[in-house]
View 1 (cartoon, rainbow, N blue to C red):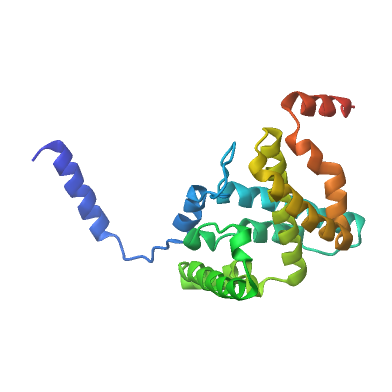
View 2 (cartoon, rainbow, N blue to C red):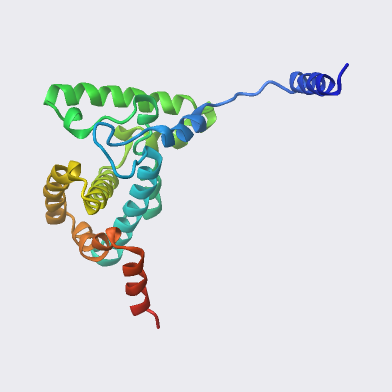
Length: 224
C-alpha cells in the first residue's frame, strides 16, 4: 500500500475509534459573518462586513457604558454591554444584512421581520451544546436583553454606521450623503436622551476620518 494511502487509512481508523461527541456549528456561523457584506445595495469605497461592524460596535458600546458610569452616575456592566454588541447582529449569520430602509419600510413589514430575526436568534442558540445554551440566550435573543443595555448597543450601532458614512464621504462617495443626514437626525435624538452619546460625539467621532498624519499630530500634542 502506498505511504499516503497507508497514512489516510490509519487516520480514518483513529477517527473512527474516537468516542462520539456533540459537534456544534455555532462558531462556524459566527466565522461566516465576515463574509456578509453590509451596505449591499450601495457602492462603497471600502467594503464593510458584519464581523468588523460588530467589533466596532462592541468597542463603542463599551466606551459609552464606561462614560455613562464615570460621568453620568450610571451603573451599567460595561463588559456585558460589549459582549452584547459583539452578538447583536448574530441573526444575520442566518439572514444576511437587510438595509434599514427596507427593514423599516412599514410597521407590518417591520413586525414580521422582527419575528424572523427572533427565530434566527433562537436557531443560533440552538446550535450550541445544550449545557451552554442558557449562558448565551440572553446575549443573543434580543427579547431577553436588558433594555438599558440594549439602548446603549443601539446607540453604538448607529454611531458605527455614522462613522462609516462619513468615511465614505471623505472619499467623495455621494452614495452616503443621505445616510449621514438620516443618522445625524437619529443621533441628535440619542444625544438629547443619553448624555454619554453627546460626550462621545464631542470627543471621539470627528477624528475617526482623520488622516494618519493628523492623528499622529494630535497624539504628539498629548505626549507628556
